[in-house]
Length: 301
Length: 270
Image 1 (cartoon, each protein chain N blue to C red):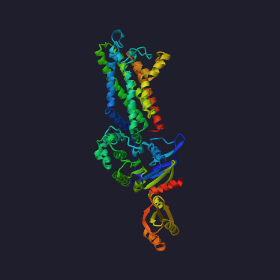
Image 2 (cartoon, helix red, strand yellow):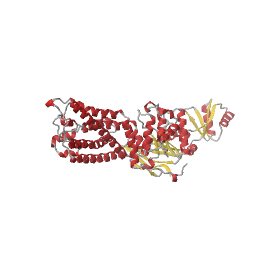
Image 3 (spheres, rainbow over the protein chains, first blue to last red):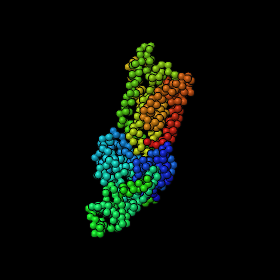
């Protein structure tokens, strides 16, 4: 059984298809990185899943049940944009209200638990309006975690978080999926962070799913390469193109990328030994999710 | 990782859901200065009206209980004394419900609420009950304010106790219908706070019914409207008047709750 299964989802705003026949599958226990440009339909899809906006057509199933089903909705934690808190109330009281809405019995204990999880124990008595952006994001996560949800839907949760906040977020999400059977759907533009935790990816463009893949498949699509800089770049490029399987010139970084089985040292030795080309900089790197995503977007255009 | 087959979810029942939502709404109500400001205003208004109503033959009221309800159900306004009574509570109630629901949307509370198991009809019911309770409280403070100002201005307190009781009961029952109307208006214009307040004010003052009365006269048919029944609960009221108020209030509450629920289901929460 999948945590989320979306089939042929449409959401129209007037004549515009914000979501245009989207199919999506989030396996249970996954951390699903949902990626797309601004206006690609990520948030709209998430809002449809959460029941905040009705879809025009299509089917959304959560754990095999209709997404509007009260049973399944009681176990969903959501953070979309900002947490819905009353600014003049304390963080604790805001959480008590949400706990009451969720029908949580031992609410004090539960609130303490989730605030501790997001390292916000000390902020409980702060008025929400006095909390910084980073604190608000963490409190939003704590809101979403109330009641031990089995599915977390997080829209840009790491925006505004400092390095420590991002690390904590990684730890929490990894722990939830690995030890508590939780599934996480997370959208973010900070792809470097997403790459560290996601087990599955969905790339959306123009309201349609462009590609869905596992982290392993992404790994296979993102090969390791040797990058070099040489005194005579033109000559180095010409020689490399003849000698190696796949060669690219990265204009932005002014470096030659060689995709082959050879090590960086072997490449440098070959260029200097056979052609007298002095390599001034070399190393090994891997195509990142961000680069893969940008390439994919370029291909599509 | 848990096996998919053993993953079980609880289905909270209607009363459990409503209990949670009402708990939240009443907690907020009792912790917002707005509520206390409005019940204080409701207490203060009778004093202002009765003291500014002139003396002797030109006096707006000759009997203290006229501050609570008019002598007879007059839909066409002939004098301010017939108009300015406990029905004003429904105007304050409209403004209060608008601010309360406006705050729900502005803070993102509604968004947070509807991502849980909360159902749209629960929201309508909860807000209706909350609004009705607020107006009931205002009715009580208005009554206290009316009695004190009546005594202070030396008005007569002679009355048929049964009729007075029926009038007060009728007006209190109408709180429910008014609250459902205001909740519905605020659901429709949830993104346009100003329109919600203005519309609640216009309907609360009874202008449309007063306008209709100017055309059709002092017809009992106007009792099918919330304002009509509210006026019908007057100092010549009897048990039938209470039943009319009850029927009108309950029917309109059901209609507005159903309509509001449909709107909430069909439109975006944002």
